[in-house]
Picture 1 (cartoon, rainbow, N blue to C red):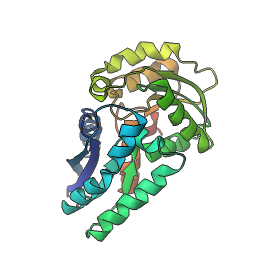
Picture 2 (cartoon, rainbow, N blue to C red):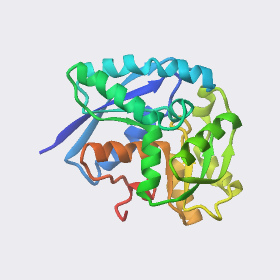
Picture 3 (tube, rainbow, N blue to C red):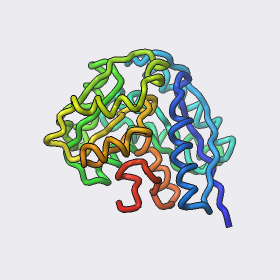
Picture 4 (tube, rainbow, N blue to C red):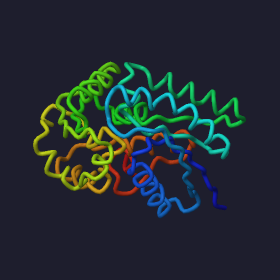
Length: 251
C-alpha cells in the first residue's frame, strides 16, 4: 500500500531552487521506494537581497509560514534558508526549529521542523566528517558567518569559496555544472567531505555525483542534507539515487 507524505516548505520569496531540487530528489527516490510518495506545499517569506539585515527581517516571517503550513496538516516542515539561520549566531537552528514546532503544535499539527542549517550540520556529522571545505554563493562577510557557525559545532572548515552574488534571484540562475570546475579552486587536501553548495538557493544537484566521482570524497549540500533530515524525521530510509554519498544506498 502506498503512503503519501505531505511536506511543508518555508521558502524565501525569491527562492527558485528549493521547490526544484527537493522534489526532484524525492520523486527520484520513488524509483527505488515506490510505496512512499510525496507532495509539496510552500509558504513564502519576503527576501530579495542576501544581506544580514534583510535575512533577520525575513526570519521573523517564518512564524507565519509555519502557521499557514500547519493548516494543511503537513507531515513535516522544512525551513530552507541556511544563511538566514546561521547569520543569527551559533545554535540558532535549534531555537528556530523549536519555535516553529511549537507554533505548528499549537495549531493542532505536532510535526518535526527541519532547517537546512541544522540539517547540514547533521549531514556532516552523519558522514563522520571532522573537516569540510565549502562553496557558497554569498558575499565574503556572510560566508564567514557560515564558517563560524559550522565551526561552533566542532567541525573545522578547511577552505571556502565565496562566489559573491548578493541578488538572490541571480544566485538561483547560477549554472550548477560550473561547480565541477569551481571545485578545482577549492583546497580539499585536508577535508573529509565537501559541501558543494552551502545554500539551498544555489543549485548543485546536477553536479553532486559528478564532483564526488571526480574528487573521490563524500559530497553533500544544504539541499541533500535537508532531504536526508526530512527522511530521517519521517522514519524512512534516507536513500536517493545519484545525490551523493549521504543519500547513497551504500552509505
